[in-house]
Length: 347
Image (cartoon, rainbow, N blue to C red):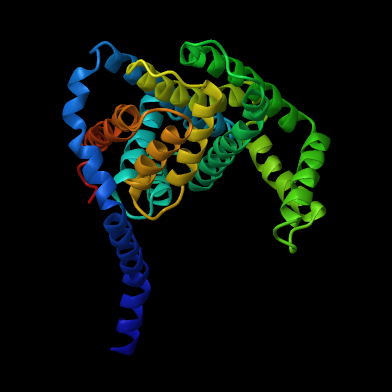
């Protein structure tokens, strides 16, 4: 009984703690969620043609992840079965949906995505390496965005209808991200210099971190990414930039649909903070925390509370809510496919 009890604790203890944390988190953000849901009827006032624009932008953002997965999986032995685009897209969509509805967030989604890829014939070690590299490169792009926006923030306000420049800003940022990404992947010394600089800054608030230790850790992560995308660094940098910039463009489009006037650089900073909130696994997909945080940040940069709320809702509709049923359909289709193609003798 003692052994069985210990097994139950090991198996279900972590899940119970995760569910408890999720429950507390949802309780805390319940008012903001209810406020957001209460604003849904207001979407009827948005010009209908903005909805397909947002869907296309988010689809392009997801396609960047599919491209990264294809690049990282297509790097190994010649006898390995290369995963098709349909398989890669299905696995990512299903994993993304799981990360938004199940406790554990991105970790849970990665497990499901990996399972589907392994069932499709990809070696487990290759899948693990690929997903780790994708996580590192997309997170690196996210961390890079605030640094790139500092010059724009320091420059005076642009013309009156500045938000309309948002899509152009996203293209310029994508070019800069690709350039810096290639520098990091092809020039190790560049990574060392950046790591030491970051280490000096971090050391001011955390004495245990030194310039050398920070640089060493950054070089280690760089080596993992470089190995995963060896020979295809251009494509990897472009795909990672596309993933983030199309998502940012969707937020810009959501605000432009409401005829909001705001500086694209400030909107980008709000976007970065919101994405960072989504990475905290308190609620699935940052539900509530991202919505409330993004709305508050948009108000801080000068957008009216009403427009910030509706803009956040419109953006989250395309980036958070719509991918959930799409991912569930992808997972269901995959299960049906396995049932049809599985040999009769398999259990």
